[in-house]
Image (cartoon, rainbow, N blue to C red; front, top):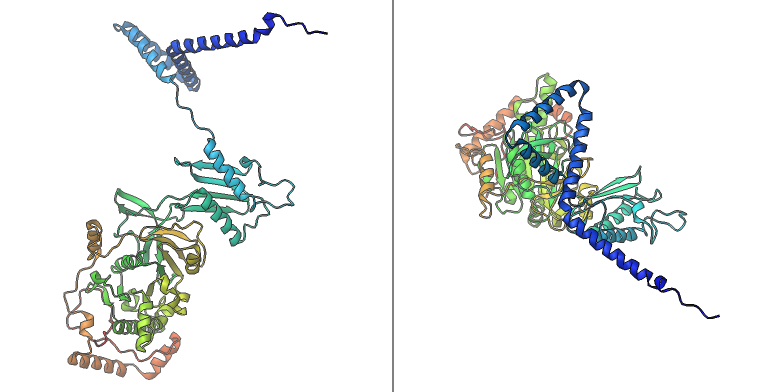
Length: 575
């Protein structure tokens, strides 16, 4: 049976309907363009009316009468003013047009590029967060990433700045190796060159990754608001510590979160070890510590590098010596060991007599040793003892004797540090670029952030005892005699330096080449031996717990020293 053709109206109806729709759409667009101002004003009037209605509903009933009276008075004044109604109408239309203007569309979700990045990151995490026996895996190839990524944020370049991940409960988040693999993957997929912080919530099976802002480098050396026995090592993140100190930065005065190191008899971390790469800022750290210690104590500096980085402190009040050679370093550290023993004996004698400790035993003594590995190598070549062996007494008994030891070394010589130094330096600092393994070997714990390959001088990590690992930025304390130092930093350091001693230096007084001074010192030693019985010395030595050698008393000063020098000063070696 042959098909009959459809009526013409049915065969061409779809084309006519499409043409009619196009004409109607074009007319609607034209009308919208013509009536756009009226639409904007109408939208604004509607919003103004809604705002007025909301304010009227929020007005208490006892205040509605006065409000109506005030509005009526305003309307009456506008009506009586020449051209008042016209100006009021123009003002109302202008306010309605401003209120009803089209605002930019607020972004409520990721765009296509961000969705692609999230999908790629989700697929990369599947091998680590899934097992074949899971009946309903949270991570699966081709799965829905929105169920695992609950919170995310991107920067202007389309890179992740914050991401919250929900992982399955069977993931071994308690193992450092498993966590390190996830952190390394997220670091690589989210963009290198930035420092990420990873916050693991083992109880809730959540991981929050966030990009940390760079620590400020505009804080220079200055007088920090601290009490005696507190030293500001540097500054860290705001949510890492609970204490802030007022500082003067490049953009004015502000409160900065500080890493404060407490020393003294009640400190659990009485000594400090700083390790870093060349040029990382360990010497600037020691200079900063020395400038903060001088107002309240005495400082003995031993520089193994021999580059003259501490020349600005030579001859200053409170600076006992700045030694760069092997002979001077051995003599100064030997004196420091005898001085520690003398303080212990004097304090023990005072306690047995029921008296407070003498004043010269309560004044803090700081021993700053920079690069002891170089001195140890020279001592081994010359057949002399390692200077680190002379630090055993100050390190073991320094807390009770108010003696603090700070050691700075580089990574290439860190294996030359003695076991005593490693054991008794519970405050640790790592400066400069370092791998997570190097940081963990020094601090004893890996940081919760990803170290960046390039960091400014003085940037690193700090850990006090068994506390958390904190990011650290040491205040800028360069050598003021260096030509590369800026004028602002030079003046900041010079303003903190004590006055130079006008009298003869203690080391010059105690030189063995001066015959008459040696005779005076011998007389003082003889008098001290005659006045103290042998039995008393034995009892005091047993109380201290060590049998020190006969420590010579110091040579007398030729002129009164205006600075806060201790009772005993180091004696320089010949040559």
